[in-house]
Length: 222
Image (cartoon, rainbow, N blue to C red):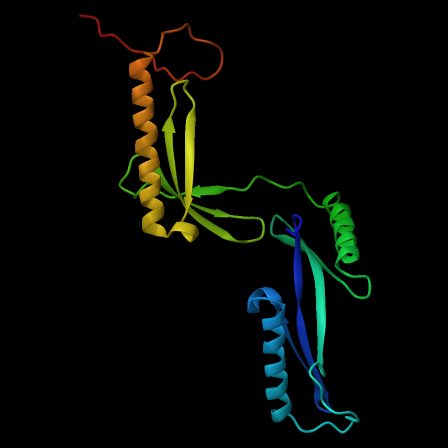
């Protein structure tokens, strides 16, 4: 299930060992370790290493079994950011389970969204065009969750005066391949435009209100 906006799912295993000197805790998330079974295996290995390093407990009255000192944990975290300020709260599954904790997380998110300042549009920064290709630009965008997206964006005009855009993620394709695909998309789009104009030449029309794509031609008097 895809987490809702502003809500992240956390599930994993927590190792907790208590001694006279204090408690040692460490969390092993499913997402980081490649699934529930692998996260459990890592937590067991850490628990066993930790028990060999710590002094023996004076309160152990039963044999050590597979899940001693290890508990299954899961929760939803709501995180809302506005103008540099963050509101965050975690909702643990507990005895209710993930569906009930998700409902509580959604309810709190809805209440907070009515109180916090309105969301402002994400800003995309276009770096100077150093790609060597006209109509292809490199962009860096910061998402609401703080993730940085870097892409090559190809743009080209259409017959009706609009523009079309195609984006290629560097994370998905790699820098060189993303640039190649963007340049290829730009060339294909321009070629289709020229072919369309050749088959259907544009008909001059009277200027209308709003923005137009035709520039006035200034004639020099002789």
